[in-house]
Structures are given as C-alpha cells and as structure tokens.
Amino acid sequence: MRPAELDGAPAGPAALSALALTNYGHFTTMVVADGAVRGLDLHLERLVRDCRVLFDAPLDVARVRALVRRAAPGEGRCVVRVTVFDPHLHLGNLGEDARPRVLVTTRPVPVSPPGPLRVRPAVHLRDLPEVKGVGLFGALRLRRLARRAGYEDVLFTDGDGAVLEGGTWNIGVVRGERVLWPAGPALAGTARELLRRTGAGTAARVTLSDLASCDAVFATNAATGVRPVTLVGDLTFPAGHPVVTGLAETYRALPAEPL
Image (cartoon, rainbow, N blue to C red; front, side, top):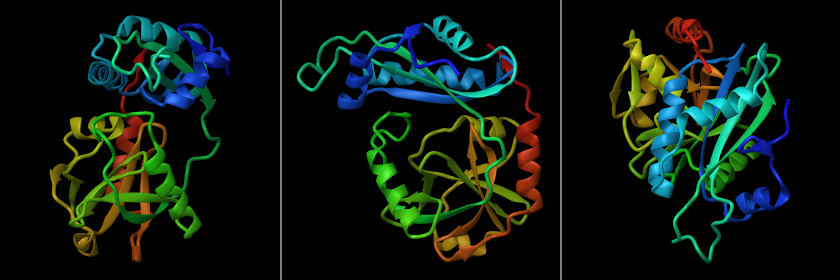
C-alpha cells in the first residue's frame, strides 16, 4: 500500500494536522479490484456534489481518477479512501474562498468477509446527512457505546422511532418478498443505490416497532457489500434469509468500471 498522498505527493504532517484539527471536509471510500471500481460514477458524483456543498468549489473528476489510479495497485484488491479538504482553512478563516485538495489513502481489503451485524438503536441525526463528511464524532461515540454494550454497531433513528441509517452503512428490511429501504434523512450509499438501480426495493417509512413484523434486516456498504443484521436491540433476525443472500449475490455480480 502507498502512503497517504496529497495531490499525488506524500502528505506532509502540516496538511494532515490541519485535517485532524479542523476536521472539515468530505470523503468517499471504494474497493478497487484490478483497477476497476463498482459504482465508480456514484463515488465521483458524490465527491463533486459534496465539494460544491462544503466548499462552493468545483472538483476535477479526471484528476481524482488519476490520483486513485496512482495509489491503487493495477492488480489485486484494496480499499481506497478519497478525502477532499483545504489544509489552509482553520477555525479563524473558515469564511475564505476554498482551494480543495485531494488526499488518497489505501488499506488492505479484509481477508475474510465480515460476519452478521448486531446493532443497537440510538436517536441521532448526522449534520447534513446527505453529505459524507469527515466529522464523525457523533457516529463514533455511539458506535463505541454500542460496542461496549455488546453490539457491533449503532443504528440511527429519529425522535419518533423511524429507522434512518447505520453508522457508516445503509439499512434495508425484508417483509415477505418485498425489500424496503427506510425513508428519511440519510446518506445515499453507493451500494444501496446500485441495488436500487437493479430494481431492488422501494423507499418507505420504517419504525423500530415495524421491525417486529419484518423477516430479515441487512446492511449495505461499498466496502462490505450486503451484510445480514441478526440483532436490532432485542429483536433477532436470520443470518441466511434467501432474499438477503440473493441481494448479496446481485451486488457481487455487478460490473465494475475501470479507473
């Protein structure tokens, strides 16, 4: 794996310190397999859209692709994170015009696929939930509390008990043969959107109390694909429901786009 690169050069401590201390920016995470990415267009659209929202600035998509190609190996698989931020912005000058820069980091793909998820519901709405921002304090704090309580992750709900999203993933439910994507403020994850392109599922309001009448629950994420959720609070669900298994197979079969 290459070290962190900022605009194609090794990222120095000053820029990384600015990202850590000011923590203002956005990112996307993708799996690169033999130089190609499933849902690449969605990842790039997200970066362009979020850059406009956070920085009121354009983003050169061709340049982003070139930087990811540079960081990712031509063969094999790795996880690439693209973070967009301006190291010159800080708490005292956040109102100035931004010059966003592109940080690319890589990490290995886990050797074995992750197992089923057990999640703890918590009332939480992320700032700008439609943006994949780097400010993860609220989500990480609730994930830590969930793990210390014996769960793997947290499931966000609103104040009325409506299911929204996971800490870093989207949630779907199965009722009979129907797949439902809980409606509400949440990030449109690339894995979820790719499945929706195949015609899988419809959006609907789903509450925690509704889950008692559901047959299965699952999580979607670009890095892990489709993953069964076997516990939500004290409600249990099967790990091998055929609809969830079929969605996982559909996702794995989706073509990837060359970088």
